[in-house]
Image (cartoon, rainbow, N blue to C red; front, side):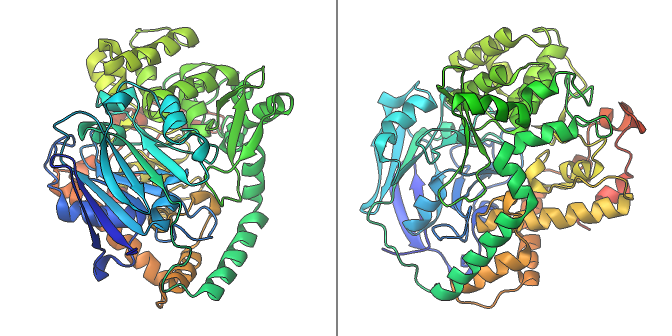
Length: 562
């Protein structure tokens, strides 16, 4: 079996080709590889849902190895939300399966002329199968059938009804280690792109895959795995994540001296009922319901995925994360955790980005479409998205579309993508990242939570963190490992038997970000797009330290990549 190969699937003709990756792409993986391929092979001016717009699915450079959390996957495409390049990063079992089968990237182009299709990938070969019998089915049902009891070797990536409808907030559901569709490539609308190609599901089974990796300096790599795992486990941040997941930060950001909990469509920074959706409260519920912390992919030692059961001990979700809790919870004034968990499960089942939909519903509440805090009406609205009603399609097409439809000018979005939960008026470094990342409003593009530092320092921190996150995404690691460029360099050196140091990693990250920026430039983006919405600059968030706005000079934003 040829390793490090690129699989090209033409949905129009049904043809599949496999070619060895060229030497120029040897040290590119994940997000960086997708950015390079998209810039080379897709017209930046194309409509994101056109048949010639290419969808790339790329495991990381370290995929298929024993490095902890190295099984993440990058979906790279032109976004129907932003109109620019987008990478949707996801855990689950897909990345490791693809990498173990020697696949460096899948490039999907064209559009099926004959109904829905399923892409099947095994050690024996790759083929497209008719999949009209899967049409209309939701993700939990799909993964029960496509993965079922074979989760030890099999993983699926599927679209639910939202993807079939090509809605801009549609996600791609990826199998978690328990065989459930709780991991999502969500941001930017990859589900809509996959749906436009008539690709309902990808099923990967790595049974029979080779166990050895050519070129790997095995003993040295094993030493790096042990050392890196020890660093991750000894990090206090890992202990916190393993106890309460990302939901544990609710108590931190809702505190009086922080006030960064998005509430009532980002108008307030605290919510009086925040404890009812906090990680600490969820941990208490779990003690009597059989809840526990799980890995979101094989080989993860952090285990920050919250297994959330209902009062009868039945599974509800394993993806109750801070962003979901904040955008579907406090932002809509909905609680407690049980209510938010059910909304999260619906989003997973339908195939929706919880951040985008939480923002869109917040805008709809501001427009008077439904009352604040109305859980039942919010639940009904998600079901309308499933059914494809007019109102459901409006919400399912995202924050900006919803605001435009209902005449709301206070739009919580950057580059067309809904704001994450990290508040840019109090955490101004996050505002720098939202404005200047080619990805738009994406907290994972570069986390900067420093406060009480000057503007120049925030700009430098954002630039550095964006470079580090590009390196982490390209390696296929999880950001919660807090991997340093030197860690990644050591792995690359041993994995590919080639010299590599931290400066090499950072230079490659900078080149990849420049590829993303160049794609956006050719798509029509200018410096005017590297801005936050005006209301964040003018509407103060009231905190104990005084009114907070995003007040960093625009020329500083322009200097981030100059």
